[in-house]
Length: 254
Image 1 (cartoon, rainbow, N blue to C red):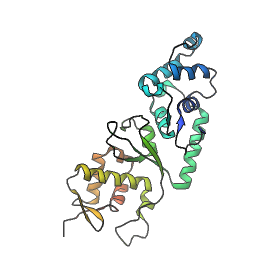
Image 2 (cartoon, rainbow, N blue to C red):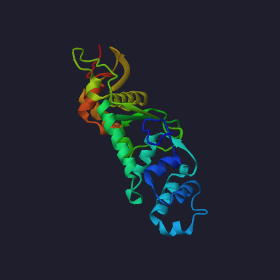
Image 3 (cartoon, rainbow, N blue to C red):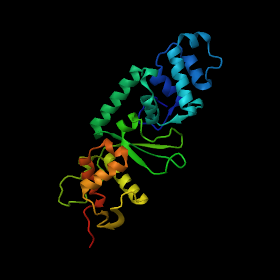
Image 4 (cartoon, helix red, strand yellow):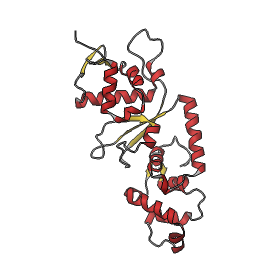
């Protein structure tokens, strides 16, 4: 496993955390031992002379008890862990930040951006798939994301996948304007709202291969943002553009 390969499926716990948080640290053996076994048998010199590192390691092991065992997780999960840990506890490795920045830059050049799609089975989550922008995933402290091996993560390039169904004379596909990840997010929320009946005006019946809704696109977009906090990472205008691919709005029936 190459820990600098951001596109791989998993990073090992100790290797990932050592790279991101303790690069070139002179106490690597003590830190690795602390990650695995806690403070047991740690040298007194390290415990006394590296209080900030000890506090960080204690914080990680106390807040995220799953870190006490060897575990492989998707790179995005490890990055979310360190980005949402209070910054007073650590300083990120410069080499990690440079590699991460270069990866994000190349992704943006190639595909316009990155989105994260994830799902997990009950009781951790509802079992539904959620898609959010990578920035929201990495930095949001309100996103309901329980760290676990059972969570399935997939990165989605912001490339076109959905063709605009309405209006038919639109020369550009909606996905080209909205982005693949945003379209996936919108579609997931619409299906969830229909399944759970959280937006009364949105119906499971279809017309011209789309669901139907008595609301305008603008009102439906606002309703989706009110119900699903993660959709607020994209604008109402973006949602308005995207919903037409899945829902026939302002529908009054035949």
